[in-house]
Length: 107
Image (cartoon, rainbow, N blue to C red; front, side, top):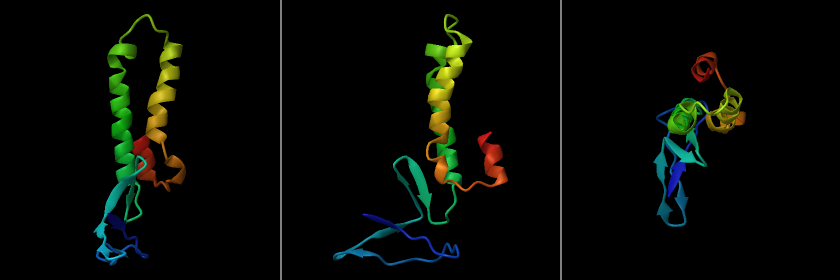
């Protein structure tokens, strides 16, 4: 069992001792929950990097079956891109507080 401690103001050296019954929980700096990364620094950089990687993988998996196929119309390819790649990239983005450098990274 794990515990994630978020201090305010953000302090990387802050550590909390959390117990569940008689069990001491290990404290971690970040972990993945429902496909999104949570960190003790309240930064979304890890989550954005993970989403970019996953969207890139989704795009790559469609190379042979969609992008290189000449029988599929451009309209269909765009629709699949929006449905698969864009949604993979932006999953959970409603909770992000973004800065300019992160917006540039997503573009």
